[in-house]
Length: 109
Image 1 (tube, rainbow, N blue to C red):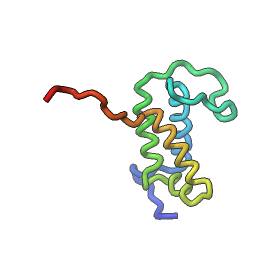
Image 2: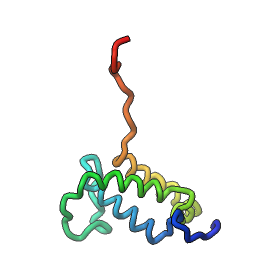
Image 3: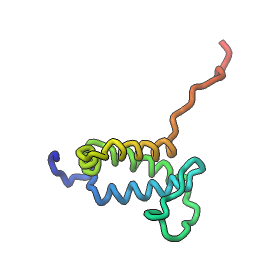
Image 4: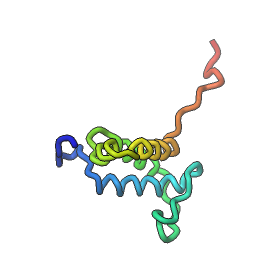
């Protein structure tokens, strides 16, 4: 593992785990999201979450995969690290999907 840090930019594993779980709950309520896992998701139905939480969840997932994230460092050392990164990417793609190519011109030339 790399250098340990406790500065404001360093994201420790327990915080990151909670952040990923919260982002997954936000994704589960997105129209394109997958339902939360019955084993790990909320035990009771949740009220509708505000749509502005999607941007916050997307930002959290950016932090989780950042080089200053302890959890990313630990997963990168694990055999199942690539699968974890794919799962995070899948969550991020629901929250902030790639922009499709524009088919029509915005203005005539």
